[in-house]
Length: 145
Image (tube, rainbow, N blue to C red; front, side, top):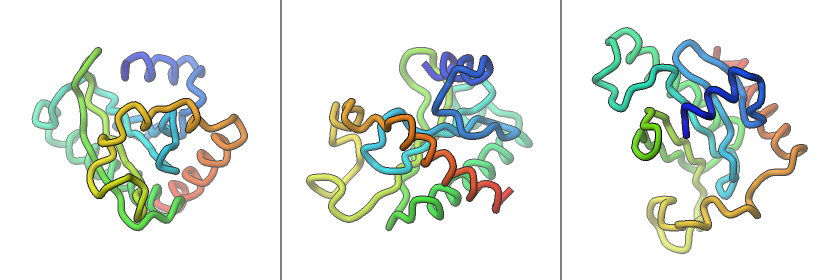
């Protein structure tokens, strides 16, 4: 799945693509149940941080933190949740960055408690909303990079 998303970025067919960095691709989440939900997709097809060369790993972690800071400034959450995943179909390491606010889930806890609601079609941004999200995030990335 991540590999397919990267292939669509490379062919110019991923509308969620925000920016390419040295170690990964910044993309908006398909569904914006949490406004500003962003992913950072590793350019190397690996499943674990310790499989990356130390220099690449260090830059990947640094760039992820820059992306997270940009998300924080662009969408002004109370808190950010970070999760590094790489399981499932087409195993490929990628960060999920979720802007969080009080009361954004029925009970305190991880976003995953929402199950299918997390990716409900009603939270897919229309093209204008998606462009606005990308513009806001890019403006903050410009300041930090």
